[in-house]
Length: 86
Image 1 (tube, rainbow, N blue to C red):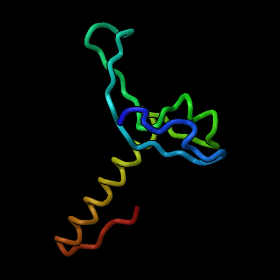
Image 2 (cartoon, helix red, strand yellow):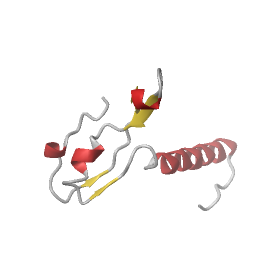
Image 3 (cartoon, rainbow, N blue to C red):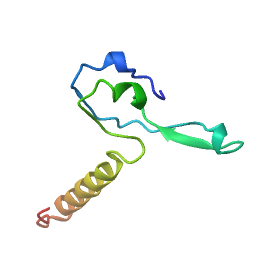
């Protein structure tokens, strides 16, 4: 759910890794426009957290890279060839 995790849910100094991707209405951008937010209410949580990942621009690229690496590893196992070293 968009921005469901509020600041009072976060332990002071905790590291928050937000992997949620949600679209919410953004009327300031024009009629029918949306913007991306995470499952964590960034504005509230950043006041409490020691570190926090933003949405967008957070862990998405790393998630994609690891999915690609795992896909390649699986393909190499299926083909019976040695996997590359990452």
